Figure 1 (cartoon, rainbow, N blue to C red):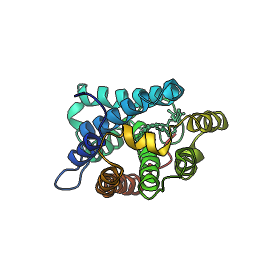
Figure 2 (cartoon, protein in one colour):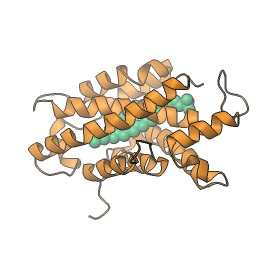
Figure 3 (spheres, rainbow, N blue to C red):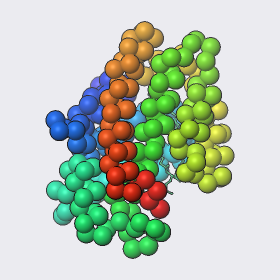
Length: 211
Ligand code: 1PX
């Protein structure tokens, strides 16, 4: 099937998101997320509350990119500069700019850290490793401190519905287990690089705790 999920496509999107001078193109960043969300949807409806939120955030960014000020949303770097220069970001509490590009992308950025940790533990896992355990460990080390109790609880329940490691490798659609592991080994440095560039940019501008 031409439109089936493939890990390779995710890798390609994140690869395209890096410009020659190490800026991050929002267009490809969100297309990477779209692929991931469609993958998550294929895992079942217990994940829909997660994919709804992710789609909502992807859509906010896409609207900004397609909107009249879209040229400022070409890269994460240009977005940060534009929104800060024009006071379009709620810095202390949500008020007049509840859906700024900066705060919206920050949520996906934290989720990218989850992805990085989860894929790394999948890569180094053994046949009897449990995806639910790998997933919740990655979650606890990334997104969980930013989520209220009720979301943490719901996420924990969803993780229990994750397919086994074998089934997971299969739906990643990248060949044999060894081929999946090789591809993960290629994808991870890229995902880490995109994450690190964004992290440094947000840190430098004091944006890591945006409400
Ligand atoms: C090859 C393996 C691929 C696996 C793909 C999985 C894609 C996962 C996409 C997850 C995107 C999650 C975005 C969450 C953003 C967020 O933190 N939103 C919260 C805060 O937003 P707000 O606007 O209120 O400040 C919001 O409260 C979130 C609600 C939904 C629950 C989020 C739980 C996140 C769990 C992440 C792990 C996903 C596990 C899926 C396993 C396949």
